[in-house]
Length: 72
Image (cartoon, rainbow, N blue to C red):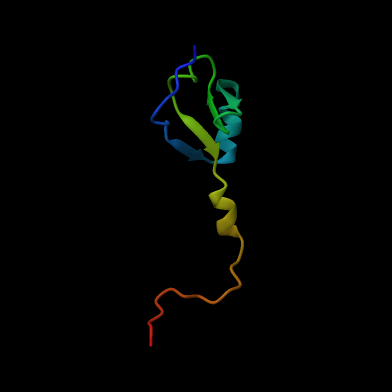
């Protein structure tokens, strides 16, 4: 019987190049949609995902800048 976790382990985001370096130690878990440690990752260790947030920072925003805007 499989134990269902009530509290999920937090996802950690790492750069894609670090994910490539750690690939021999990690396996992809489709249920978690993340990478976990091989052998013990089912219960212990980090749950990591590729840092896709860095990609969005690289794209330029073409809309109006609303920061520091005051309401009139």
